[in-house]
Image 1 (tube, helix red, strand yellow):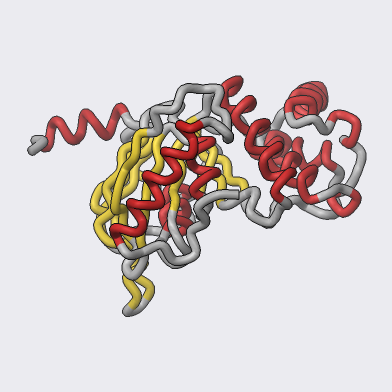
Image 2 (image 1 turned 180 degrees about the vertical axis):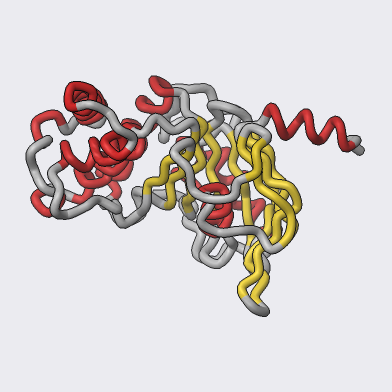
Length: 266
């Protein structure tokens, strides 16, 4: 068993440390005694069916939800509220529809006082990173779903967070667009080397993306397994190793009796 000093040292080194976190909404226990340490630059997937608390856990990390019990820390500091060190990407894109792609990307840096030259550099850098440099003057309503999600990722990155939080960002997209964006996200992650926490209920998506897969179950939401994804990068969705890892995780869900609407693959 770790001593208090060992636990403190471990927490300080972690990009994110979740210690005995529980979240209650009235009589509903949404999260039960969650413990999780995420190291800097790790890509983590929170995987589980609806109702398992994965979005609640993400919101605890973001600072949107306060634990009923336990605590959440980032680099040893208690998470009390949202902050610029944590960027968030939602399934619903979260773009301002009255602003162009350029101004959406510039929004956060402008609030922090960046000058016009810096704002132009930021918009050019991140729009190019997500392949939207030709659409900087377009409005969100003029873009496809995949393009809007690219713009949302660029806007989150423009604030230069240490941690990027993503709540089923590709869930509303068609299969081909989703796979393309998964590959683009990995390229961005390898370039930017952010700590990334990604919520999904697709086993195949988690296996393709993550260094570690946090297998969660519902009623109450809790962590059942933490799976180290040992498949070498770059990954191939048609490789035997990919199918074997997907099957391994599917069996973990079956063993827990909590498959719910978790999807084996897409």
